[in-house]
Image (cartoon, rainbow, N blue to C red; front, side, top):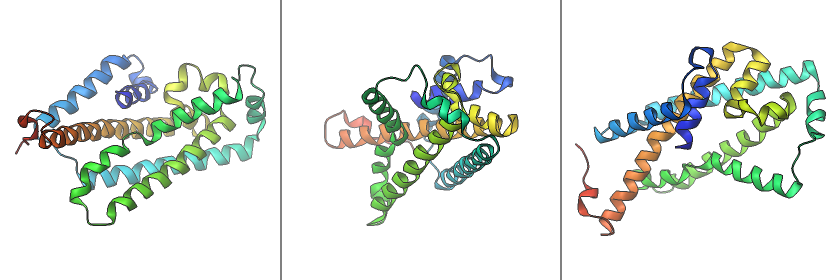
Length: 220
């Protein structure tokens, strides 16, 4: 649900789709992938790898443009944000920041559904690669956002598509639209992954006789 709503928010940041409703669009995304799962669609490793490479490339380009922007404009905005008058207490900031960062690792539990399909020793490497990539991204991009964007905007109406807003500030509308498309693809893909995870959970619970046996059946 979080991924589908976030995908709709990023889609709204483009002027072409600014009039759409986030909730109805999110319901449409959830329904679309639910139908695909009922039809027996499965994830493709080639498509997933392509999306992963495209996503990392977009984030790298965004980070590079942000660094160039900071070299030209300086760190004045960062100093203003550090003295923001609406800054919550330190302990609350750490708590809410940590909680938000945990959203970046949501979905890791679904990788356990592919253990049987992986060779011995591959699953720990998969988790390590995911943790490394998420740790780097979750530190670099929020830091650049705070250094470039006013906190009033980051916590306001544009908080739902902060990276697209950052892209527009540092490189213009073209990069903003690319980031929005990338976010839509990745977040929609995570919806499919969530369905795969739920289906895998139901199959295992059915195998353990915690759920009716028909939950263990698979479409051809």
